[in-house]
Amino acid sequence: MIEQWFPNVNWEKMWEATYETLYMTSISVVITFILGILLGLLLFLTSKGQLWENKVVYGVTAVIVNVFRSIPFIILIVLLIPFTKAIMDTIIGENAALPALIIGAAPFYARMVEIALREIDKGVIEAARAMGSSTWTIISKVLIPESLPALVSGLTVTAIALVGYTAMAGVIGAGGLGNLAFLDGFQRSRNDVTIMATIVILIIVFIIQFVGDTAVRKLDKR
Amino acid sequence: MKPGNRLLKKRCQITRSSLFREMRERKREKRLSVIMTVRLFLWKGSDPVIFIEQAKKIFQTKNGPVKAVDNINLSIQEGEIFGMIGYSGAGKSTLIRMLNGLETPTEGSVTVAGRKISTIKGSELRKARQEIGMIFQHFNLLWSRTVRENIAFPLEIAGVKKAERDKRVNELIELVGLEGRGDSYPSQLSGGQKQRVGIARALANNPKVLLCDEATSALDPQTTDSILELLVDINERLGLTIVLITHEMHVIRKICHRVAVMENGNIVELGPVLDVFRRPEQPITKRFVQQVTEPEESKETIQHLLAEHPDGKIVKLTFVGVSAEQPVVTELIRSFNVGVNILQGKISQTQNGAYGTLYVQITGDAGEVAKAVAFLDAQQVDSEVIEYD
Image 1 (cartoon, rainbow over the protein chains, first blue to last red):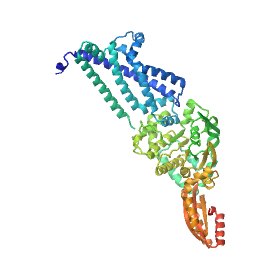
Image 2 (image 1 turned 60 degrees about the vertical axis):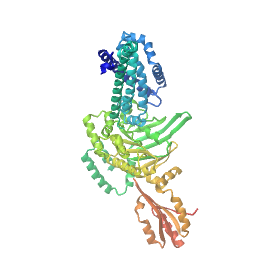
Image 3 (image 1 turned 90 degrees about the horizontal axis):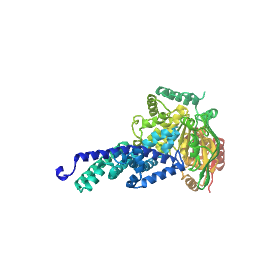
Image 4 (image 1 turned 180 degrees about the vertical axis):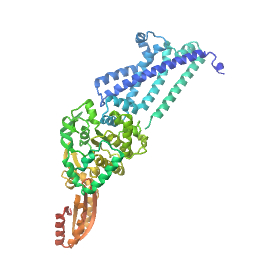
């Protein structure tokens, strides 16, 4: 029956594209998570009234984050072509999409990290200081564990946005389901291919959302 | 030998058996030391553990500089429960935070347990903080950790090994009476239980001083009392110095040995709790004392009584310490040919002894009444004849 509804779908190609999408998404999620946490911590700690309060560092970081967060992703990819070429030595394929994906998503996630950290009760940080914690202890044993549910739900949102970004990256030759839907589906007028690619993307998004929600529920002891 | 000091030496290791031994010893000592005022004398002789010299704290705000703490000199003895009372904005919160370096004084110095908190920094300050426990109004527990893990947190910071940590956590859970709740999360506990976790956490590294920042202000009266009892218990068992800030005179009355009344960044009155209760000098102190001794409606009632009973005299008797336990009224009736009508009374227990007020109406022959009043004056009782106004 599936063959009947989707006569033009080449399943081997579909699997390959799915794999590419998952590859781009997972690698960029991992790196975005790390970079976003670092940037978010920097934003939080240098903001007013915090441990490393520093107007200059905060201001510069905030401007960089805002600029990269504001550039539409499709334009960001084009703008980053020289940079991508310099560090990845290619502008085609899944790996070529990674710099743009990470640079597009990390500032977005950093803001969510900052918001999550702001939600932490100031008193808890004060208590940790009163016990003689170093800044590193406060980061690793108070800030991160206490904001973990918010960090994970933010990551869920970011990961889903990244799936969307990979589809856009696909259009300019990064491979993946977006690429398949555009070249094989849209340009050759094979609607069934476009629809199948969409269904697969939806399934990926639903799975990410489900895993994220479950993790948050498990982590949140409030 | 000072009882406080003897207990002090055993502070470092509390094991179950030594706790029981200490409790037995304490009971014996209680029998020996008949009056609590003796204790007042005792810690006057021991060493100060906290020194504050000419401490000032000025905050720069948009509306210009604000003096939160203005030239405070204070020393607190080892084993003492010291209370600071004041309304919000009096500077007590800033002052208590100077004791563990959460605030640094703009001028002056703060020394706690031999370390100059106001000047040390970095790892030295962190080390010093491990010897100063602190509990908070809103408990400030980590919700992501269980009770056990919360109590273990300061031990992790101090680099205590896992096995030792577990052992110590068990002792502390027992000490604060949270047996069986070790694996609960803070969200599953009541306010009082949360504060018990806070206390256990603050005591984990065997601190020399415990700071209490409005520790009972978020609790209901009954829970407040149970937490205060726990604090007194810990003070007696471990000889721990406790510094607390509050806006409730009830807390001061119940557990403190000495009290400082703060207003506009200054200590306006300072002394043993009972003395301050007996002779409050500043208007603000009088207001705080009234919180405990006289219910709001007291004044109205007295006026009403004066109008109702124009004959005889209405006398307010203030009993302090030992006199509160003497049968003054009985003697009054036996010795003089007067009628005594008890109108209203209240007695409160403080750490240094009892404090009470009693309103009586004395009727009879004018001469006899005058003699009776003179007799009361001669007793260790403050008496005050209340006139109609």
